[in-house]
Length: 280
Image (cartoon, rainbow, N blue to C red; front, side):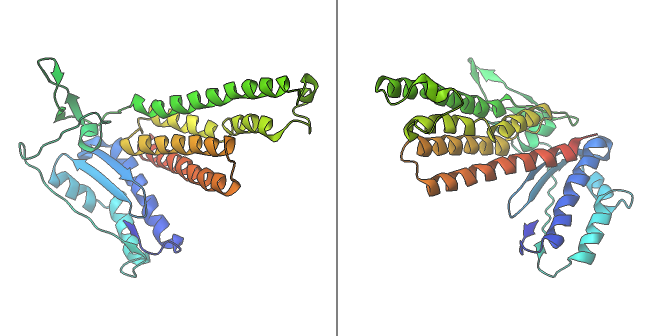
């Protein structure tokens, strides 16, 4: 689905919301022939699905009791060809032995998430994964935690910077213990206050980042896309700290901070769509 006219939310939002409902229905009824599906969000929303057979796919698409046909009819009535939303649909049938799937140093994605994957080895060296189809099963990836460890490590580094700066300022007789009796007094120099302010920033919105990463892990929603977004969030938060702790340009901080929030909102949106699709 492509959003051609973003301001017409009332046109494209119902279309975008229909797919999680269908995926939820399909994950709950694997006997329909559905193996796995993945959702990528951007201006063009892509849904990739794997089915056991073409016949089962067509049967589901024509089933009046299922979610697909009513959603398609509603789209034709509300949108049709008015240009606000674009839709394309492609279906390919792959016969046994006519396809190849290779996954090297990446998270299980697409077909691998609908398959039982084994890692053969030759002379002690791992080969690309060889996959055989099996029933729908949850899949988790610990790689979603790596960005959280990185951000936690950065937060601890900023925490260690606070006493270093304060002790140095105290040795120069700029501050004393009483300046911190009720927080920070007005006599505390700005360069001494900034590390503490940045540390507090790292304990605010990033808490939502840790929560959503944990949510993606426990619900088997961690994908290459979510891990990449998580790393982007960490990089942006570190860059925000570097700006704050160095030349402290407010506009530069604001731009980086805003971009990090876009990444954070994207993670929560992807997590929400995943939970809506697979929750019982």
